[in-house]
Length: 197
Image 1 (cartoon, helix red, strand yellow):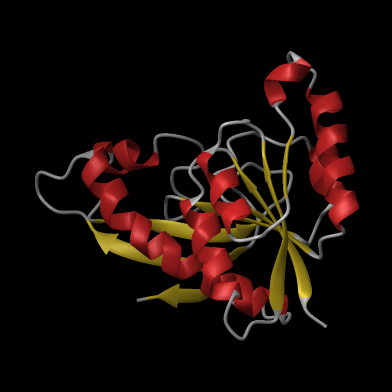
Image 2 (image 1 turned 90 degrees about the vertical axis):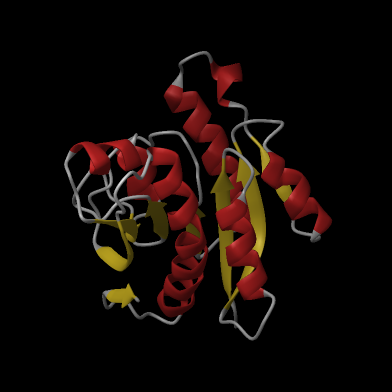
């Protein structure tokens, strides 16, 4: 029986698309919900076009009441009954209580070589630190921001004269390769670290 996957997005959903495209082939999992926190998130239309159920819980409607927002998120997720939740550009920090409800079932992709550069502005921070390499990480989500067990990483060189936009553009195709590979492994119980190279 295939694992049921819910994917949470906030924007265009390019990582969501990479996950879904991989799940269209022989795969141990299937997408059952794409959920956004912004009504005009471009990824919602892309998911609908593929026939995947979608939902939107607009965080702005809750006016800073994160508990109520996350209760609505939980309700939508529980209705879809996912075995795995993939955060794919979901730009909201989730409370420890929410994370505890889905502990061991939630993955995230982060644009840095964790544990370096947790949080935002990772590409510029890598440049500011003088890094020779940069990359992305798929990890399990825990109550510690970008601090859960690492499942997979991919690395690119930093070139002389690179800007943050240059790094972001070169890294994104690797994100699109790494996340599907890790999800495929995770869905069959493989949590061993891997390096995509």
